[in-house]
Amino acid sequence: MNPLTTPAVDVRRTSTHFDAIGGEPAVTRIVDAFYRHMDTRSDARGIRAMHAPDLAPVKTVLVRYLCEWLGGPKRYSDERGHPRLRMRHAAFPIGAAERDAWLSCMRAALDETGTAPALRDELMHAFFRIADWMRNTGT
Image (cartoon, rainbow, N blue to C red; front, side):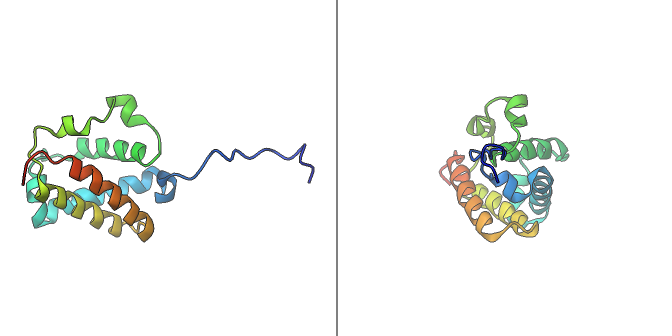
């Protein structure tokens, strides 16, 4: 092959978590499973009660947020601005029990949707840091 006529490969483009997880269809499946677990797990009753009965709007927001957070399209920021997660959740009491319930639902959703174990573990570590940072009560 002639290096002068071979198309260049853009080595700056690396795979993102968004790509590894399967893109927006996979994120949508994860979010659906997450809220299904929130609806059915006894340990999630408290965090479920923080949501409106109709979860469709919040599902859309979480899909867009997670897509962007995982390295996908930036539609969340385009539509809603900076995430400001603590500010957006300040009205809700979030302690260790709420953090742990959220994490349990997310882990169950990742497991249910077949997320590769290494990727699941990496994401859960990052989710823990965010969920723990969201705590606004001493409990």
